[in-house]
Length: 415
Image 1 (cartoon, rainbow, N blue to C red):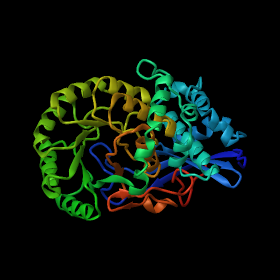
Image 2: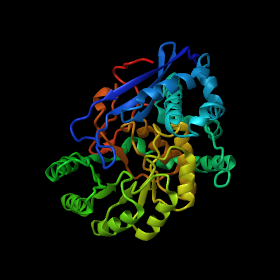
Image 3: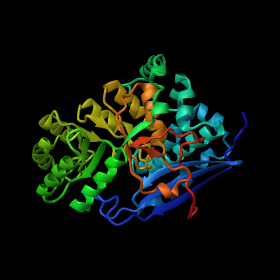
């Protein structure tokens, strides 16, 4: 196998304007979809890693990438990834940068981008798409790429290894997903500022494209607006389609309980991010109050410890880890292991626009036995990727090119 030594690391501040109203929710009214991009230079290969922001501060993440990745220069990628869990821990637990988190904010987003670049370069060096690289690793090899500190009370490394080994024996039964593709759901039918007519038109187009699940943004100052729009979506899609409602943290606990009871009649598949993401106990109270309605959380959870707390508290019915907010692919896998231990489905949030997560959901299903539900689809940055995720008839087509599908057509503002 050829040797690929990392000779340099660069960071790039990539920002993309959106069409009017696209991407807006109850909290983030004027988003500019942006990536803090890490590039690992290794001969003729480039490992590309993404962290997602909404514009402001993207340059700060890039500055952190440049400083936090210095130890990778001179490392050979195969040797680096063999014990990547230790490398990950050294960056994560840096005795000075850790103070700026710990494990959250700018430094953790920088870690995300760096880690994702390492996985992309490793997959490219082996000539494999990321999903196949992950499946080719032996359980012990995969475990060596993870960092599981502070989790022993619910999931030890030995338990994780046993989990990987036990599902390895039955994975062949789940390989059909590669040919069938992974189902998607359409987030873009109902951004917060869209009119009722626009939502109706978007739903009809979405159903015509083969989607069987859609998501509406809620969290209005006037709860009646949310309730009316939610029932409008249900009426338009019919009773068989799944409808998710996403509040983006806008409600207080009292508001959430009241509005969720009003929404019960339109049968939402889940209520997403109803209140502040750090408030685990509020979500626990809400989950008990509105059962059997289910909560989905994870878009703004920065690390595996908060996911652990949510799972311990039985405060959610779905977890939505995002590998461009968490500490990259490695921490995403840890969260997937935790969720499997607790029997909670994983339905990722896709700050990467589904580019990397289309690989990770295949791994989750085949290697960990996670249920196939669907993967969020947001098309707004498709034109900027060299190999945009393909969704046909509402289904993600399995990517075959080497790497994690993260390469962008043009990189600007090298830092």
